[in-house]
Amino acid sequence: MDNKLVYTRITDKPFGAVLEKLEKLVPEYQFRVLANHDVRATLAEKGIERQPLNIIEVCNASFADEALKKNELVSLFMPCRFTIYEKDGRTVVNLARPSMIAEMMPGAGLEEIAGDVEKTLKKIMDAAL
Image (cartoon, rainbow, N blue to C red):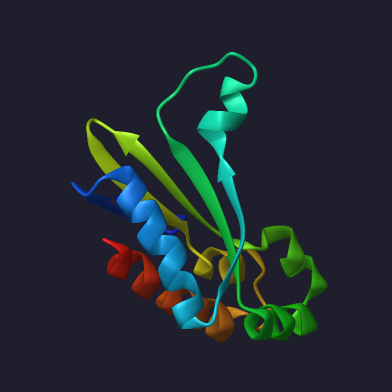
């Protein structure tokens, strides 16, 4: 399922292996993992059970600086995010598409930056699978 908002890939590889590989690859593409939110663990603290789901926040300082110089409101959409979860026995990985930021902020001149970021994050995601 790909659309303007999300780039999705599904694999038979185990959740943990995909999560580990994704985190390992991010720095190899000059991005940094800022946070790894373990949603399953967070909900478990409140007595709610669910399948594994992690939200991985990543950033490239140069891209971030360039985008922020064009329009500080882009900060509302930062950092970039991957989600990883299990569904029907398979591992699903999603990328919130940076290109949608440029669409939501027409005239800000973010198209090229957002496109470059999205291209790189797709490479990371595909390599993790």
